[in-house]
Structure formats: structure tokens, C-alpha cells
Image (cartoon, rainbow, N blue to C red; front, side):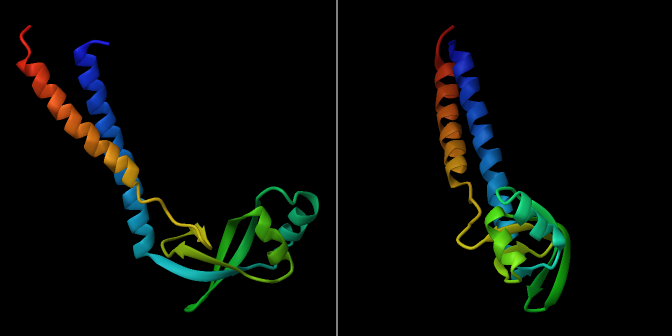
Length: 141
């Protein structure tokens, strides 16, 4: 690999790290700022049908989020396979969701990635890219 290609690879690595880390950090902060808790309940017959005929797959059903501020109907919500029995029995499932998008959901013990590893890759790639670029410019041709 030539020296110029190596320096270019370092810059691409840095750009990838900053973009992926920045995107993950933005998503995590946006979720934290608009987070709300709710209990998902449903009387949709699609859930019982999915539990009976295809219990190992996700089901798409109409549900109701019961929040502290009232009920919110959500259509075409994706229900996880291990939540099907609880919803079919009429019990609720505790979730956290983003107020602006009720389809963006985190369940118990789930967290969004902050992208710190990607940001570290971006920082390291930038530092190495700067050093390698300076060394390449100092080298006689």
C-alpha cells in the first residue's frame, strides 16, 4: 500500500468514526430529551392470532399506550414475540418511547448506544491522519 493511500485510509477512518459516532450520539440525546414511559395494552385480535399460529415472530397490531397523561392509540405497532402472551392475556408491557415518534421504543433494561467507540475511532483517525499527513509532506519526493 502506498503512503498516500495509507493517509487517505486514515482520513476515511476518521470521517467514518465521526459520522457514525455523531449519528449515534444524536439519536441517544434526541431519545433522552423526548422520552416518556407507558404501558402497552391491546385488544387487537391480531395478537391472539399471531400467538396461536406464529408465536416466534413479530406481530403488527394496533395498541394503546397508557401514559401518565392519558391514553394514546398507536396503529401498526410492532410487538415482540415474547410480549405476545402478556398482551393476549390483557396484561400490559412497560416501555419507554419518544414522544415525537411512538414507534421508537425501548423496553426494560434497554439503552441506546452513545457511539463513544465510534467517536474514539474518529478522534484516533484524525490524530493519526494529521501526524501521517505532516510526515508525508516533510518527506522528500
